[in-house]
Length: 395
Image (cartoon, rainbow, N blue to C red; front, top):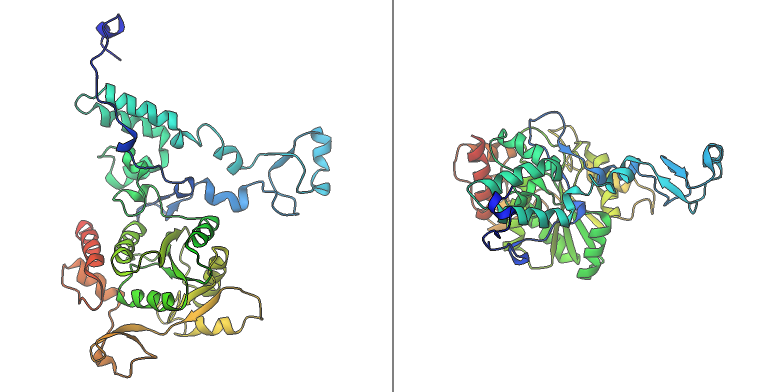
């Protein structure tokens, strides 16, 4: 409320208004995902309505009768026979959870430009002490409900939730309350914009170290570009969280790859550790995303020594001709060789294990958690800086 003297006639003092130039652009709607902090609850992520569309939308993109639709005319008697006579061109109401929620006032509350204009106005008028922060923290209880909820879980409710957290994306510090997700339509459009037709996908649930960098650069040599596709769902306990991993990957790409040779994106899938069959699943997904190839390394999607090191390579050879458009780029284990003085693989390096620098994930995590040095031949310093900061905060 304004003081009474302003209400009865005296104008309030002028205040510098926030301008458009002070703001960052709102992320696309497909980036509206919130990743749950590891160890909190049973879910690995909060799946927003855009992820439910596959099963819970009344889509008419096929000749099969969709669920959760109602005819636009004809009444209940017509509806009883509707599915038996359905065609994709029939006029219907979309009663699905996706259709109902996505277009509702509540579903659009976090993307309403009038809301953000009003928020900017309130922050400017009530620019005393902690009021701007209090206003944001209050308003985003409804206008950024899931992001605020996750932020409260992560901070124990001790820190306010601010507009910049809603608007953050990419490698910005609070981007975990947005996302890196791109739809197949968006990746295909990006490949077309870049002029790519031969595209390799690199599936990863880890930060990229020198060996991963080498795999991607091998693919860049033979393809137009590479989609570094981070898994954003559930992984094993002890694995690096998605928001840390994607920042580390962004730092690597920015400094060690030619511009427009790599696109980083994420997809909200849980890791299943199903070895060769999961390799096929990964290839099928990347086919939908517009990738012609998938980098398949040693023991792809494996766990421990359950699968053979090259089972994921061989399973592609068992497919009938034409069953899958996305083809594998089969790679052996990669490492730094002290005698070759460079990155190599088991297929290109003739030297023994005593000359190879291979570091297990367990060993790396121990070094980082204990603050010990990591050989520069294993990982880039920019990547290690981000990982060290994460482990320092976890201690």
